[in-house]
Amino acid sequence: MPLSALTGSRVRERRLALGLRQADVAKAAGISAAYLNLIEHGRRRVTGDVLVRLASVLGIEAAELEQGSEGALAEILRAAATAEPEAAAELERIEEFIGRYPGWARLAGGLQRRIGQLEQAVAALNDRIAHDPHLSLSLHEVLSAVSSVRSTAAILAETEDIEPEWRARFHANLHHDSERLATGAEALVAYLDGSDRAETPGAVSPQEEFDDWLAARGWHLPELEQPGGEVDLSPLASAAARALAAVWVARMRADVVALPLNRLESALAECGPDPVLIGARSGAGVLVAMRRLALRLGSGLGLVIADAAGALVFRKPVPGFVPPRFGAACALWPLFEALARPMLPVLAEIEMAGRRRARFAARAWGEASWPAGFGGAEVRQAAMLLSPVPDATGPVRRVGATCRICPEPACPARREAPIVSEATGLRG
Image (cartoon, rainbow, N blue to C red; front, side, top):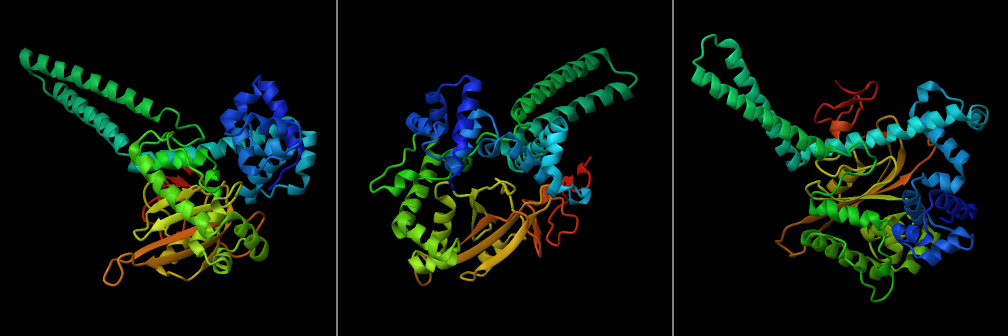
């Protein structure tokens, strides 16, 4: 959606304040310097996807570029009030609060941003601790060294008469194990370094590398919208990640052929963002329509795709809904209802458990196919399209990302105890 022309002036002011060159900012944001020049001088309006990338390069919230500092601060404070409804904050007096107490307002806004960053860090650490084999190996080394030190120290402390030769051996073992412990602890700290940042930790698998590459491109491959367009896969370091990307590019190319951009836009104007109607009117199918809706330029929709085993094979997050990179997702997602009931649309309004309580309209659809024909294996896939629902009231389904970080106190589908509590934060 086009944004205010004043956005370009704010981009220019921020860039000059940081002492950055136009060409450098444009390159980092993945656009041309000429395009950035047009944006800054109000001759081109910047779309949402490009705005997010520019804001990241300039180290500022996208809302602050879009609305100005006071407008962005008001939105942050509204989010804080929504996250804590028990406080009964006077939403209609936010502008008055900012005007009368600007320092306190900035402090509250900064705390709200920090809370969001910490929540993301907890989710990222949960993924690492629960499912990362490299971290498991590091933890095993530290715990093994601790056990050795404890055993040796216990022998020295509890045995009154030890021959000098054996005492010297125990001392040598204690020294060796303490060095192991120190080395292991340093490696562990280095591995976790940066976990308090908002961004996701670096990729440790081909799937993660592919996810990060696609996210850096704004989840959009504009080259495929043009006949004969080719996507450069060279930024992907590993051959396995390039192979995953090649499969995805082939799928997206087929989607563009099945539902070209002009037909997609016509269907959107006629049907609205309903993938069942768009898929039927265009003849492209529902899953194709869902992918095209979520992955078009500037789309604010989230998309999650699962295979028949329930594994998440594709994740496009949206603010307030970040699917887990590893392990099982929340069993209450409409995605899994659609997986169990192919060809039946599932629509539900969901709310993420926790402080932020972001709401989404979740549209899920599953399909079954038999690639080998009669007698062959059935292959199922389901997708869930997520549309943010601001200021919604009425019936809602409370869901989480994954059990370990979901604080919902009375979840009927819980598999394990959470490491966080909605009332008290992190458990001790």
